[in-house]
Image (cartoon, rainbow, N blue to C red; front, top):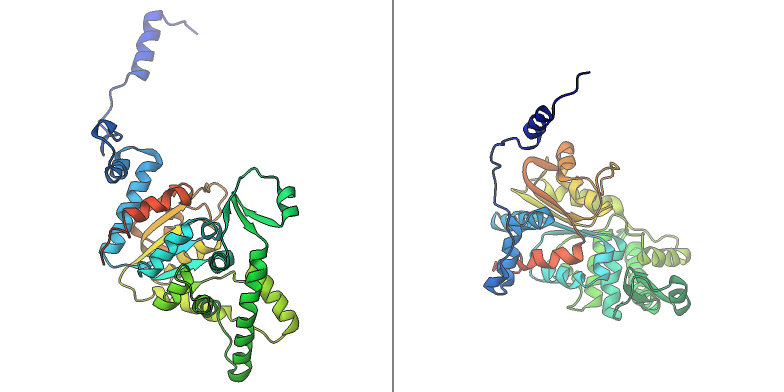
Length: 335
């Protein structure tokens, strides 16, 4: 093979490396100029041109504002760890002011709200030794510390409610659904700091497809051990949530976290051939084929999100991201 001259090498390299290109379209990349002082609203506005996940955050804000403007029927989903955190107070705000139409969460996302009405959780340390915490009877959700006594207090609160429900069941034959149980817990706790107090008061349905996967499940186990006839009807709730989407003019999906709540909301929207808007916030990659990490594009393929829907996934942890989103969307909307 003939050896090219240094001049030929340079010519080939230049052609490959310094090729003229077309001009890319879109917003020019730039960040916030702190020479202009500190304006938090404008800092958030500047995210649109920052790139990376900052631009996805700005896109999510635009999509949610579009949901609000178009009076879309809004589904909010969140996992239990977010109720363990201070995001619980933001969810309560949304329920109090009727900013969303349907909520889906996990068992922990229900009980942690009620338990916080019985006693505070504390900010601890991610690296605190599990053995030491176990000896002290302190449970942890990341760096949120939850004394086990809270669950003893929760048992004292919920068992009389189960007793009341069982008596009604025996008298009428009516079997309570998880969504009805959640409203009952909100009514009985009678605390304005509670998400589900406001959901009960404002008649915002809350669906929990895995109602037994948490302390509520433990309490059901203890109660049913003494009362074998006690039942909860999950079939009625899947019928209810799927029916919520049918006939809606427009629907919007906001899912914080992943797993069963993400699928439960998206699957309900499949019954109307897909949501018009979708915002996901989670930290899970899509490469393993799980629904948890799946992009909105996968939901389009199933008919859970419309092909023309405005949609985005933010790769981010919700406690960092969601307060900023609410500040620029629901908290600004007057109606």
